Length: 348
Image (cartoon, one colour):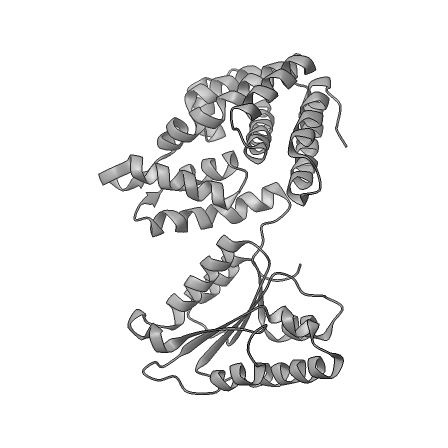
């Protein structure tokens, strides 16, 4: 799916440049809502939002009426933002009606009203149809979807997590944000939940540190995977599967557990690159993790050949894709993954 990232949209909005037509394309509800809020914050002062923010659905309302609103000066506001959800409903019209609607929309986007920001929304568009081609050409298209690649997802989640913390009235240290996003594999809903807990813990100091993350998040989610690391390194699939079963029966979510394993493998690879003789305190800073976890990383990394860690990380990314596709049993994906990692063989 082509388009700029939400981070790129936010950077553009921060510069104050007008963006008369925006397409929010993708299915991540948190990212979509984040973009909506930032667009409104940028263009419509809080006291004028009753008049300056309009919401429509292309599935329920006539496109001509929506575009008519876009061409009408708003009352008591210098600019207006018009949200149009389900713009993909135009794809389901009959041929003649669809062609007419797409032409009308194209004509408006070629000469948009200077006082209106038209925000069109769709979960997906058929890239073979003219509607998608017109919108990709004439709007700023924003991909409101998490990347399927964990590394990209983590990098996307980092600035979003900082924004989440600000919304909750606390400062999240960048190192703490990096640690949190890596631990939770860039899953925004999980990150939001943990930041809410951390904000409550931080209390009056209004600041979340890496130590807070290590205490409240790492202790809950990561020592389990370090226990599993020893079983994987020792090539004990039966023991590893028994431990996995215990975690799942006790409520550990497969996606969260997979994120923890991927984080651990990345840290083991990083630990192997550290200079010989490095102390745990030094390693903690280099690996961006707590001292106790750094000690674990230094100890466990010696048990894995580098090639095995690299192949294991590839297998974890493949498993992540399967979990998110929804077509596989989550337990089956995790059991197969853990069994093969314990054998030291790439899964896929």
